[in-house]
Image (cartoon, rainbow, N blue to C red; front, side):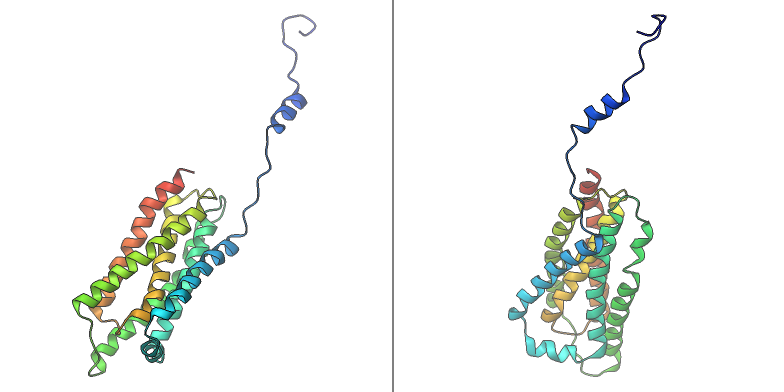
Length: 222
């Protein structure tokens, strides 16, 4: 007690700090978001390389000889990388939400070049169009392939603490959808028609929305 017996002794702050610090365990710092994004992207590239032996390489070479198809594929590949990096950047507390615009230009390149393929359907006689069965198979392919990519990305993102979980998860969905679109190229037997492209956009939007809802809830639990 203090001198008059009416006031308690002041707390011993040093003892309090020491007692709290004794319970702390070291935390391993996460790698830079760029490195984590490249790590996920590397997994997607490996999956693509593993699928190449099952593709029609002769048909792929013919399609890749067309400029807009090459540009669209490159744009989708770059979208997958930049969207993954943006997802990891926004998962770090304190990072600006402006990182979400990182994949905007690559996505515009991807979709814009894909649209040129549709114009070729109107200007080049004899270009094969997709039938309903082929289109349905492509959409199933996009949904099926993007799922493991999305799961892997959400699991990697859960190691951080995103303050905007839905935005982070939506960027992850864009990365997964773009990666699935790249893997579709070796198995896509035709140029994109307008209907085909619109259907792909709907599926890509669905993938992003599903990631935003489901992935956002998982990340918010952190």
